[in-house]
Image 1 (spheres, rainbow over the protein chains, first blue to last red):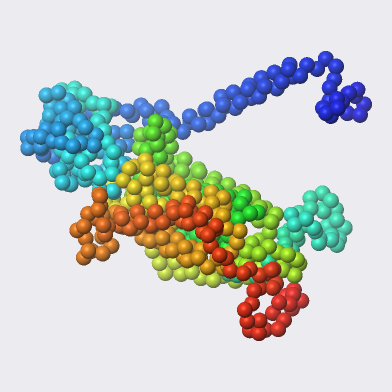
Image 2 (cartoon, rainbow over the protein chains, first blue to last red):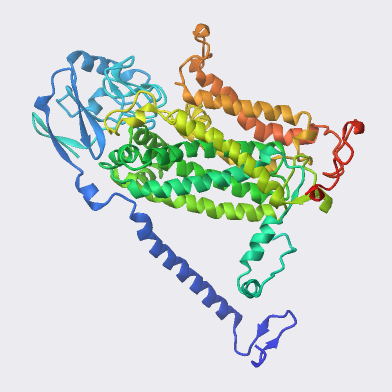
Length: 186
Length: 438
């Protein structure tokens, strides 16, 4: 610095002729903004790589043959790594669920909203407790639906939360009937 | 770091190295570090923890040579380590029990810090770095427990990652991001293995900062009184290398007792069943060192509030240095604080017991039947609520108020001149400089 001609103002900051402070500020701010944007653009691939990969997403739907399920029985199928309950409900279980449509429900839903129109016997639910993700046990608990062994959540025969810490009803997967005996889940 | 150096290079090669990389000087100064001469055995746990970290890294690197981080291969590779790899059973049992030993030592170390006020000025940064190490330890231990891919591994991972899913709006996306799928699975196991290998080295990095932050103000000591002169200190080596060494030897006895006589005592039998995503074990419990936090999570009926309570309980540790209003560091001179502290330790232990039981279990089976609000008055849920309340009150109410209200006992002027009501009971020469005794 000794051999360059730099004059100093009383505050001590170097001032050279033709150096416009506001222009300098603009360049500094613009450079900082460009750097932050660049870092964010580079960071995103490193964050997004942890999201589900293409082959995981490709396994998103399965078909299931309902004729394998007997009346009053439940079959558990694996869909996207999670259990899906396919339950062939008895008329008594359907009647109980409909009867409780107007009970004091934590996550209000009617039984009709829990199955496809005209198919009340087929209840298809994601078998994951909405509390912390355990698999509830079939046919147990006060309402004859499911009971979660982890923290004691009780679901009724429409998969609605009735007791315990879970905040929501058992979730419904996306599914459609391909025929009377075949469903496509996902 | 201590500001003065006693190192004098003796040979030409030492002088040559000292002007280029003064690493020998660094080591000599580290060993020569002036340390309060009255440190008791509670202070050996720092050395014990360093020992634990080394044991975990050495055994962990070896286990990684034989382990397979895939959902199909993980459980079998752990059994391969146990049955086929030469001494694999020993190395795995040291690693698995080593995690428990590590937490045992860190809890003693933390309680010691609270009792003797080691978090108070000028050691707040030292304390905060310690809490960060503790958080990193919890993350490492959690991910390590997932790796054997047994039932408890899988469902523990499911429950804990679902906890994050309870955050409003962003929760479910974060859970999917952590899983790399729609449930705990192969991608989850693989990334947990990667991070489980990484985090111990991050812990080692923060330990370096922790020791650096220790060497700026120097050690606290059981009286909590600042070091006043050289007469209050002894060099770290040989005085505390030997004392820490003895502490480590006793600790290894306990460690070896578990490894050789009860290696699965702190594990869970369900983890010897391969992970099954379709069946949840009837009773999911975390490892013992997480039980107090698990109890607090379940004590709150609302899911999100439970999660916030659990994180808040660790958050308390971060703000502790600024909650304490007392100017007296050591509870040795705080007649009331030591009793509240004793109850705090008991509260943590009872919360641990609650975390290991089903919330609806009764602790006094004959007394059940009286329901208060949503649970039986004699259930573990209510025990957990009472002691969780005390846990938070200890930090947020008792610690700030007691510092203002309590009348502390008279404190010694310095470490070398303790307050003695009966000076005659002290043998002559006890306060003499111990360096001179050889």
